[in-house]
Length: 193
Image (cartoon, rainbow, N blue to C red; front, side, top):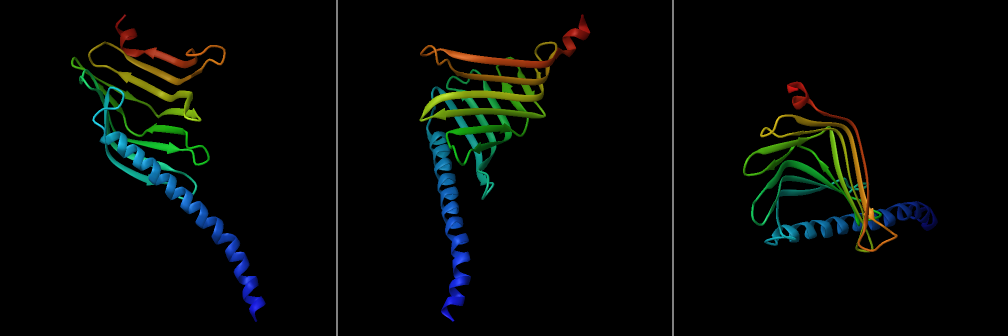
């Protein structure tokens, strides 16, 4: 009789032990990232900037780790300009937590004393990857990017934008940048010519 229960218990144990370990890892990493975000927000300034986030909500269990962020704002300490957006998502790579990706989920307003510009896109993604705590690579990728500044004529339209930055392995404190832009136009400025 006991051998029957053993044959039933072994497959369940093979499933439940790794599932419990993965769940503990996911929730532990989720809490660590949330605490780090909240600590950055709680500081009065971060590297000369003020950052605020309305709400942080972890999503994606068990396969993804994504933080839904609302009411984001970033400004320098002198309030010379301000960047706001209603929503965004911060993706943390589960197998490499030093690689984070920010996905814009709403238009981004860039406010200056003279005007407010709007940056919108079908897809707008910022990526930063560290290697053992040191900067390894950063990138921006956008589809159908539009920068509209009512203070100046013309809206900048870019069909596809890719920008990557990484340290130059040949020289210390030097960087390499790769830039590609397709279908670039300044619609209103061209119409006025």
